[in-house]
Image (cartoon, rainbow, N blue to C red; front, side):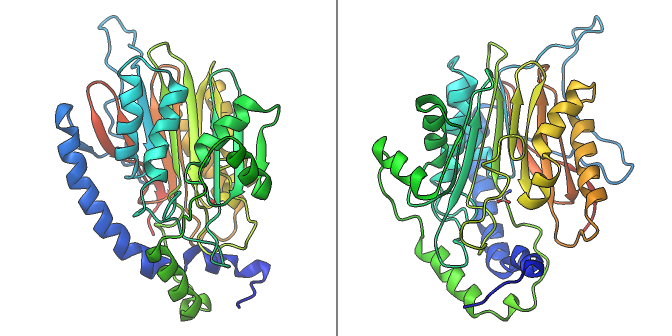
Length: 363
Ligand code: GLY
């Protein structure tokens, strides 16, 4: 069994490239076609919203009323990565019926948690170094209530357990066996989350030379974070992941940490993060983005500032991908990542679209 020193973690970040990249591409194309059909009721567009270094952001965001004011677009839901397209459908079913943002962000990411083809969230997620699938999730509503689970095993919907922690306990976070036992008490079924495909990937990784000589993988860490504003103008957010593939057993990333992987302040806005959790935690990422918005930055400017802070705080950016996604109370959104390749799904009554985020540098 490989033993990793502290410094070996850059290796763990990137080793899954041979397995994920091909799978991701196949899956992505299939899902993209499926999404095009699903989106026929609305308008689906692949919108370019890329900012490279000093480049201009092209974005159609808010419709003006012609009197200088801007309409608030609501309801609205956004979520990280291409898998957000399907997740947003789940959330939109709630929002379009006048449902609340909290229900929307829970139902939305549950779609991804149940997707066995997705190697980084829920069922089918890649396991840790010991071959155990451990999941992290958190949820937060417009009243600043929040709940989280960390390193939970054998439960398909950690986001719903996180919601139960929020609603049925005086605590914010449960981890490990305590989280599992709590979920079982609440009636969540036991489920083996290690699919044959994920197990095969893990076995391949264990045998692979890449353990010693890692390659850059910028498609790693595709956590789903979701932010929604309902018809009443209330915000909620959710975040769920299987985390860093082949991580040390017991490792928690940013995704279950309120303030790191997710933060909501209904007076200001909401933000979530994806990518290397250790880097997000170091700058209290999502909280930072919300505070920047509180101080007057747009969601786009806030995400860019947070990414720049990560860049400034890390000497070695090799393989260090982090992306932030944010929304303010006007329904304006922003996204930005360290490296090229981050995208997000945005759904309103008019559009269901995948948008390329701006980025600081190319791979
Ligand atoms: N952002 C997910 C993780 O680092 O676990």
